[in-house]
Amino acid sequence: MIRPQLENRWITILAQHDNPIKGLCNLIAEEISHADESVIRYGCPLNNLIQEMSPLDESYRQGLQKIFERWVEVVAKALKKGQSEGQVRSDMTPEDIALYLVASIEGCVGLGKNTQSVDAYQRCLRQLQVYIQSLAV
Picture 1 (cartoon, rainbow, N blue to C red):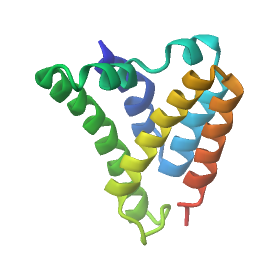
Picture 2 (cartoon, rainbow, N blue to C red; picture 1 turned 135 degrees about the vertical axis):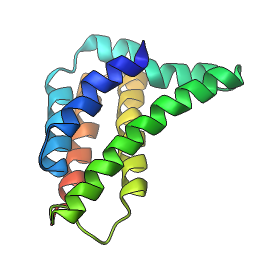
Picture 3 (cartoon, helix red, strand yellow; picture 1 turned 90 degrees about the vertical axis):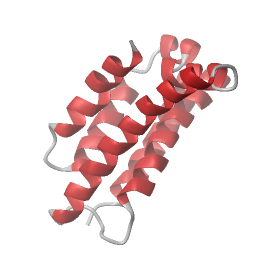
Picture 4 (spheres, rainbow, N blue to C red; picture 1 turned 180 degrees about the vertical axis):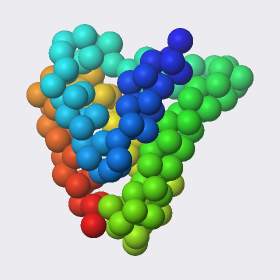
């Protein structure tokens, strides 16, 4: 159930962009513009399950990890392609940046959920956009 949501919401859309910096910033802008109380109240299903189920069920944790790794892999692939096309700085490691970006997105969701603040969630995502833009050539 979670994997198709992630595929539709992030992976497929990112793959459609010619420039990963613009693609990532556009995806985050969409998250910012669609932020509402339900996002803040319920958070991200993937993040919620990782937090709650990982210590309880190893096979469930592994399944969630595969979903998370797929997300990181697609972002890293887009960044590598951007490097080869001169759109993304070459002095960074795409896999490391992708891991940081995905963790940051999930962290913004967790922050918003904990503070019960759409504003805090949106501010966090805006700063992530600033970071992503700093990766451009």
